[in-house]
Image 1: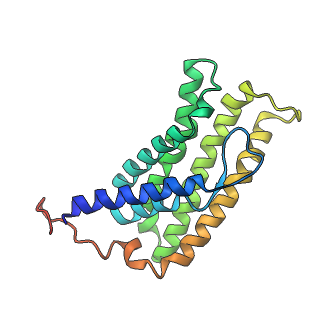
Image 2: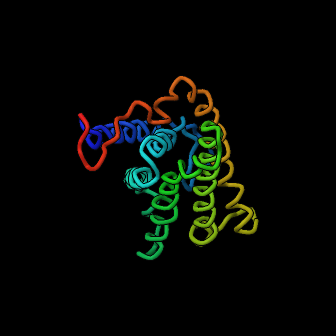
Length: 200
C-alpha cells in the first residue's frame, strides 16, 4: 500500500471512529448544543500527530463538516442566513478545525507525550473560545438567558461545563494510550515517500 493510500485510508477510519464516539454522549443540561463524549476528538488529534499539521487541518475540517451534518438541528434556530453562517463557522468549522493544530507543539517539547497533552489542552481551549464567542454573539440574541447573568458569564459557564470534562478525559486517555501506541503516535510504522516516489 502506498503512503498516500494508507494515509487516506487510516484517516477515513479514524474519522469514522471519531464520528461514532461523538454519538456516545453523556446526557446533560446542554440544550443549546455541546456534550461530553467518549474522547471523540482524540482520533483527530492522532491523525495530526501521525501525518502532520497540514493533513491534520484537512482532517479536522472534514470532521467539522461531519459534525455539522449531525448538528443541523442547531442551525435551524437561526432566523436568517447571516446567523446561520455564524453558527456554522463558530460552532463547527472553526471549533473543530482548530484540532488540526494539535501536533504544532511537537518541536517545543523534548517529551512527545507532553507535546500531545499540551496540544490537546491548547486546541480544546481554542474550541471552547469558539463556542464561548458564539454564545455571546449569537445564542444570547436567540435565547436570552433567564438567570439575568451577563452574556459572557453564562456563555463561559455553559461551555466550560462540558469542554473542561471533555478536555480532561481526552488528556487522560491520551496519556494512558501513549506508551502502548507510541509508534503510531510518532508515525514510526510509516514508510514515508521520498521525492514523490510511492513507497509500497
